[in-house]
Length: 291
Ligand SMILES: NC(=O)c1ccc[n+]([C@@H]2O[C@H](COP(=O)([O-])OP(=O)(O)OC[C@H]3O[C@@H](n4cnc5c(N)ncnc54)[C@H](O)[C@@H]3O)[C@@H](O)[C@H]2O)c1
View 1 (cartoon, rainbow, N blue to C red):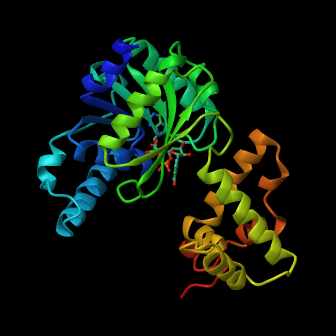
View 2: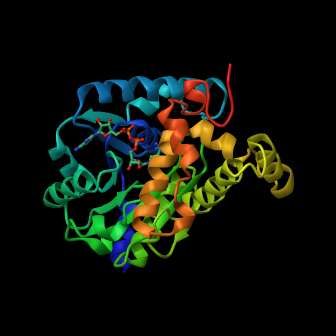
View 3: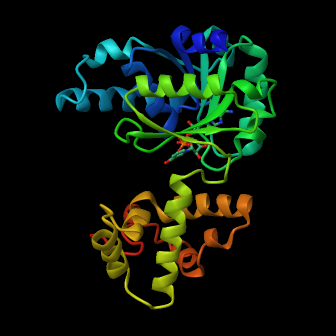
């Protein structure tokens, strides 16, 4: 156990797989915390986009005194690669490739053969069971979920999810690493679909949509109710519009598929909005209209 705890102390070099929205954000906060980071993607343009967006985000944060280290010093900590073999030099892996079980599983299978046997693995999956992904490689004890939120550099929370076989030292090591990245953590002790944030949020947001569908109230009043009655900063329907209705429905469907719980069944009116191209703020209309 003591040996495993030393993993945290030894972690200097993090391999982040997938350089999209989440992977580039995770790479950014890890590099800002002083870790060496290798950001891997199969698509060259994703890596180029990640480099540009990380650099722009760091400049912005530095300009606002949200970080104190000059961006060029942080960028030195980052390497960008299309070679999976580069994972062999890393102490820890965080995976953020698209939400497809087989894709993630096969990637972990390959990483398992490339990385040293004490290297910790984590997935940033939103809805695929951690234990299912852990089963793709031979290190279920060293495997857990680390669920960051978007935009990663700004959102303070990370859910640390225990799989069926995840060991305590693995959870501890990830908690410490993520806290070193300036994040707050909560531990999710059981591998339930949607973990905590998405589960609670989707239950509320889908019910809010159902109330509007049944004409119990208008979207603005349902949101106002949650803001003034429950102290939410933003109403659930406005939050859906901000995240994108397509993104919300995709994630809710995944939780429903895994859990079978009707609380997570997407109401028909929400699907209809998507079919009509009303995806929320990004398309100019969702539950609300935007100019
Ligand atoms: N977007 C969110 O708000 C959010 C929040 C929390 C968790 N997540 C989860 O994070 C993960 C990534 O989501 P995202 O929004 O960053 O996706 P994204 O589509 O922005 O990025 C995925 C990246 O993975 C790359 N990729 C595809 N196949 C690959 C492979 N085999 N090896 C390496 N790279 C590969 C793609 O080229 C792309 O750059 C998903 O599991 C998602 O559910 C997303």
